[in-house]
Structure formats: C-alpha cells, structure tokens
Image (cartoon, rainbow, N blue to C red):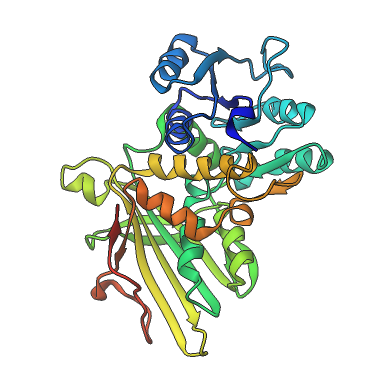
Length: 355
C-alpha cells in the first residue's frame, strides 16, 4: 500500500521516551508516514510533533473506550508505547479493525490482553511485543542462532544501567512486574519452570569483565526463544547497576550477552558467545523493536499481516532486524576468551560490527 494512502499511526504515549524515539525512527525510515502522538500533556506532545513534521498531537483518556478522541478521526494502527491500563487502546483498535502493538504488559500480566485478542481474533492483528526492547534482543539472538542446526542451550544476560530504566513509564513497568512476582521463568530440560531464591540468582558479566549480581526474570523472551529455536534450556538474567560505559564516565550503555550451545549443520558441537551492545542504552533498541513491528503491521515491509495474535519473531526477519539495529549504533562484540564459560569448540562469529 503506498504510504500516501495510509492514515496516521496513533502512538499512545507518543511524547514519552519509547513513543517519541519510535516516532523519530519511523520518520527517518518512512518520511511520508503520518503520525499522531497522543498523550495527557498536549503541549509536550505538540512539541515532539512539530519537531518531527508530518505529525499531529492529541490528548487521550485511557479510561474511555473511544480514548477521548474526537469523532471522525481515522488511523492506520494503534501503538501502545505505555501501559494500556484499561485495554481501551486494544478495544479501540479492534472496534475500528486496526493493527495494534503493545510493549508494557509483561509476561506476568499478559493474560487480559491475550484473552481479549483471542476473543476478537478476527477483528485485527495484535502484536504482543512486551519482550526486552520490544523484541529486538530476541530477533538479534535468532539471527545468531541461524548458524546452528540444533540449539540445545540458550542464555541471555543483560546489564541495564540504573539510570536507563526508561523514564517514569518504564520505571513503573519494572516496579509493577517486580510486585507481581519475584520468580523467574526458565526452560529446563524442555519444561517451563519457575525459579526463585538461590537458583534464580546469577552473575551478569559486562564486556569489561566486571560482573553484577542479577537474577532470572519472568519475560516473554524465554518462551519466544525456546519455541522458535526448540532449545530445551533457556534462561534470561538481568542485572541493574552501573553499566561498563557508565563506569568509564560515558553515560548509560546496554549490554546483552548471548550464549548459544548446540550443533552445527554437520552435526559437530557448536557454541557462540556474543555481546549485543549499544552505547546509548536500551532506548534505541526499544524504538527499533517497535518500529519494526509497525512496519510489518502496515505492510510497509512484507505481506499484509492477518488478524490474530502475533509476536515479533513471527513477523520480523531477524537478519533485517539486525541491519536496522546496527544502523542505530548497536554492535556485536566478541566475548573475551577468558570470559567464555562453556567447554568445547567455540564459534565467535565475525568481529565487532558498527554502523
């Protein structure tokens, strides 16, 4: 569909960190794509819209089924870049037959969104993207996994700088998820299992060799990666503290260590350990994850997405996702040999890449 025929993409929370970063990225990728930035603070949303161009601003009321929008407004998609607390963003999208994307439900509170999406599955495509960085890390991991014929074990360990929790909305998400459960979800010997106490604890090493205390968390990345790769053992650990770049006085960075173990195409044992890093922290990766989802939902890349429930790895090509991540300044880096923990042959892949 030509972009000039598209109605504006309605971004709920469009003046917040995730929303405004996504809007800026979509403007760069698709200059003619109209955007509507919705928030409670109209002057703030208007300022972001004016800076973008080809964008408008509006206020919303998440307590209302019509979101408090004036009648006669038309949109091409609804993006919830904040918690859709009453699910009225999803109701609105389904009522108007629009694609919908959300990032703030989390594994521990996803049931209402999934049930509503399933109850009206024929109404519109619903992209559940409450993964780490809206699915960006899942997609990067799946690209690394393409070297494998079989993946047996997959582990991700993320260092999140304590100053990079994503603004008030992101901090509220983390607090809410921590209140819901302190247990982590892992896949162990093919069984999804809750872990708590000492077995949930982990050391999360940064690329500079400094390890922070972390723990397994309940996150959608675990089932997405387990079911996409078939790996019997999957774990996602997170530590919040000072990132390596922060220790060097360079500001908050994001580091995600990705370890895979299995066999290669010839059946020989294979493992790889890589860091996905971004010197600007988690914000650019989250924006890429959301923008990739919007592209697919609007068929700006790829075929039209059918109604029903979807996840990022089901819609987005991992190789293309990695291209977009590198464009924003992300990089893959080798794990120092002293920091490689598993035994056996090691496949580190190509050297660090950065655009």
